[in-house]
Image 1 (spheres, rainbow, N blue to C red):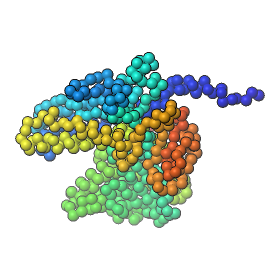
Image 2 (cartoon, helix red, strand yellow):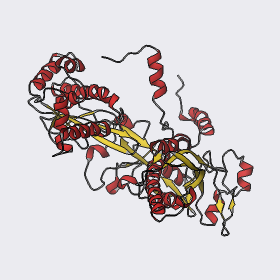
Image 3 (cartoon, one colour):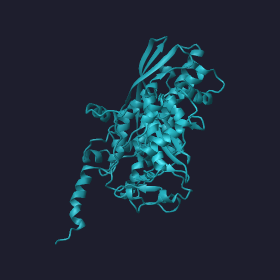
Image 4 (cartoon, one colour):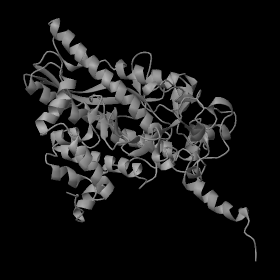
Length: 494
């Protein structure tokens, strides 16, 4: 029998790399950010209301053009290529335009498509002038035809963004903090807000819950009543029928000190608005629940029941772990991790810069009105607010959430050096701590991460490298899948 040799596979590997470039996932991620995420960020902040109440700004329709350069005399010039940015120590960036509508006492005063700043453009992305060029055209422009792109040119330097490895959001993880206590926690994410929701089961079977802005010792069943599960039967139906779970439910029901929904809301209201009248306390409690409890499910009053059922599911998992009906979740398993590529990192950065831009807009409007000057869109927009913040982060590598070393100089020592730069994966864990398990090679790294390529010293096991044949998929919306399931007749469990 003839033994297969590795040489048989080379045509397959060569055809794979003919079709796909090493930087394809970075480019796809950046394109997704430009096509979808920018609109989402504008939608999150679509109306700006300054202190002067009669004035309002409505934002819509964000557009990003191809890179251009502004010459010393102030004249813009298109057809600006990366090589010129490298030689002239300029930033290869695209102008961003936003449609702004100024209203005064709900009467339209001014509508303009304003220039609001610049976003560094990824080389070989959809926006780049090199996209779609043939080898001859690339050589003509002074580019290396074998260069795969996937990086930025900032102040003449080539910068690559290092992929960040983070714990998956909106995913319930069961862990045991001590021998007795079992915890079910989820990092609930919506836009820039990340809220950790934790359900703890004590050895005596009592269930407690914590979320951002919640009282310190809040009983889970008090929160379930506040969310709209009013009767004993409704609460019991939210949990599974296993006898161990139902025993725990009955135990918690007996020890729940509140009778109805208003009393439960008041429990939370006394903590978030102490010393206020009862109506205000109830309203504040509802606002806190809507805004900070599981925001990924929704932030409106109609989403409260869905949140109650989600919390019941989390509590069920914690109780099952306490009775050894399920195993503890492994935080180092790669299904519990997500990789944030260039597009996601740029999304975090732009969201932060855009928030600052809106803050600056409100300040400029207030100042213009108090000085009794004529108010129009051109005078209140300061494009530097966005440009400076993004450029500073790209230049220094200091990112949102205190992350450092996110952008780094592209190493051009040889052809392989930039390959490793674009495939590096960095964990946010503290390099000065032992964290043996987090640094170990995990079984789920097989075929995804290289088990050998990692630095010596304190970063060992925390900075990893993607395998050359591994691919990272781009984030997609869940809505089409949900709609398809409803059409197929899938029903929510009552």
